[in-house]
Each structure stands twice: as structure tokens, then as C-alpha cells.
Length: 352
Ligand SMILES: NC(=O)c1ccc[n+]([C@@H]2O[C@H](COP(=O)([O-])OP(=O)(O)OC[C@H]3O[C@@H](n4cnc5c(N)ncnc54)[C@H](OP(=O)(O)O)[C@@H]3O)[C@@H](O)[C@H]2O)c1
Image (cartoon, rainbow, N blue to C red; front, side):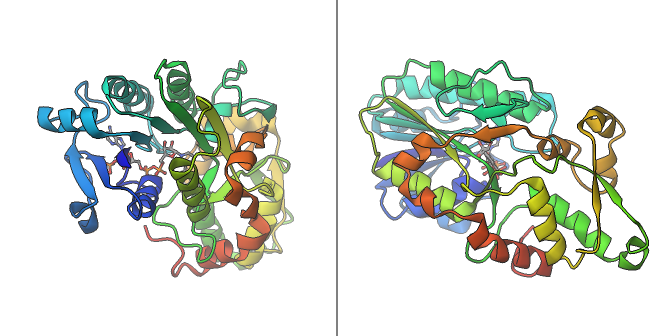
């Protein structure tokens, strides 16, 4: 297999690169001039390709471009602007323009057999109810530029007339390794853990409070997936497609027993010895005001995190569970101890 992979210097792309390196003949990695490149990417089966997703040429050297176009049989698009603090133009350029540029390169490729696109459950936006793997446009609205640009990019992948096998992966919130809890990046729930850490230093004062107001809907789903289980499931499908003749399949990649925000809060409070705290859920109607006055930023959390605290979508997983067998093994109840203990101890959990 000859693979072209974007986003290898990121969290998910790095995990995919390392797992695929055991089977692939060559893996071309798109890297930017400013990318931090790990030492082992300089050795086979990896080959570095200088470029930028948002640049019209995508690949800077014409020789590199010709090599990709003539040899690559598999493209994996894990590169994106993923930053809960990010603004609209950065999201637009990397996510929408970047995906269009890559689709353009894919159309020129002479030996391409499959195109794998990493989307996100964020494409459901503010949708209420069960969101299907089959559908994208459900007339949903969006709270933040990241979700909206991920929606738009997936739209382009779906509509593209590429005559190859297309696979769309919609991961939930990626968390640390299911066995050790380790994660190389600070993200989503980890901002919340920092907040809990701060609270745990003020225990004596907090014990006097009857309630602690917090913006969340107790019933909102926190769709989690550990990085190792996500990457392994994707690699299985990339190497041995379950339904190779189907042109498009889309997968919601989350643990089936992902917790509600309320369950997650209770588990986290226990891990941080804050079980005495009674969080009082601020009503959904206050969400706009909470964002406007930037309450979360004052506590060191990105303001867009609030959108996830009130999410109303559930995710059907019919195609994911049929094609990606290992997903059946992914259970929050099984990995939550490793996840929460590593984070609360602040030791081997997260490496920032
Ligand atoms: N993390 C999550 O919880 C989560 C959940 C659901 C879906 N996803 C999706 O999964 C994919 C990977 O996310 P991640 O968490 O691995 O993100 P990440 O750690 O932020 O990595 C992003 C990668 O994209 C590359 N990139 C960004 N802009 C680029 C550009 N203009 N040109 C070339 N490369 C560019 C970055 O390269 P540099 O090293 O040069 O910056 C980096 O390698 C994304 O599509 C994201 O939307 C992530």
C-alpha cells in the first residue's frame, strides 16, 4: 500500500502513521515548514512531502506532486485546523479550502483506490435527536466555526465524484489511551480537568457552598473515544475494508456506553476528591449569555466548550458497528478508571 497522509504531526494522524507503518510500503506525509516533525518520520517507510493544505498548490515541489499522483493508492486526510479557541478564517482555510485542495489532488491521481476523510461528530451541530451516518444535511445550525467548517468539508467529500472507495470517519471527543490514559494533547474534557484541579485547591471554601452553578445539560451526551481504539478501528478498515465494493460508508466512532455529562461530572468529581460539590446546571436558555460574557474563559476553559455541554444529538452507529468490529470492545465503563486516574494524578496522563 502506498499512502498519502495529512495531519501526521497531529494527535490522530501521528497514531495512524505509526500503526500503518507496520504494513505500508511507503507513507508520504504532508508537512508544513512550521510543523514539528518527530525524528522517526525521517526514516522509511515515511517520506516527507513539504506543502500546506490551504495553499493552492498543496504540494510545493512539482517532482513530489508527480510522485504522489502516479504512485499513491490510498489517501488519508487527518489534517485540519482543530482548535476550540480558533477563529473563522483559520478554520475556513485549513478545513474547507484544505479539503477541496486535497480532493483536487485526488482527482488527478492515477492509481488511487480509496480516500479516507476524518470528519467529526461535530457536524451534527445543534441537531436534536438521533443523527444518522447516512445523512449530513439535517438542516442543523452551528454554534462555532469548527463544527460548521467540518460540516462543509464533509459535504465536499460526499459530493465529490471521485471514482474511488470513500470512507468518512466521524470520531467523538478523542481522549487518552484506553489502558494508560496517556494523551499527547490538551483538549476538550482536559480543560475541564484543569478547572477541577483549580477547584480542588479551594476545597475549604467550596464546602461552604450549597451549590456550584455550572453551564451544562445533565442529559447531554459526551461522545468519547480513546485514541488507541479509534486509530486501531480506522486502520482495520483502511487495510481490510469490510465492504470494499461500496463507494461510500460513514462511521460514528464513539464508545457505545459514552456517558452523559452528568455521569461524567460525577465520575470526575470522585477522581478529584470533589464529590461533596453539588453542581447546579444553568438552564440552556442562558447559553448565549454564558458565551457572551465568556464565563468559561475566566476559568481557563475555551468558550466554545459550552456548546458541547448542551449538545442534543445522539449518534446511530449501524455502519460503524458492522464494519469496524473492534468498536464493540470500546467501553467507557472499562477505561474510565485509567482515563480519570491518569488525569487526576497529573502524572503520566497528559503530556502538554
Ligand atoms: N481531537 C479530537 O477530539 C477530534 C475529534 C473528532 C474529530 N477530530 C478530527 O480528527 C482530525 C485530526 O485531529 P487532531 O486532534 O489529530 O488534530 P491536531 O492534533 O490539531 O492535528 C492537526 C494536524 O493537521 C495539520 N494541519 C493543520 N493545518 C494544516 C495545513 N494548513 N496544512 C497542512 N497540515 C495542516 C497539523 O500540522 P502542523 O503540525 O503543521 O500544525 C497537524 O498535523 C481532524 O480532522 C479533526 O477535525 C478530532
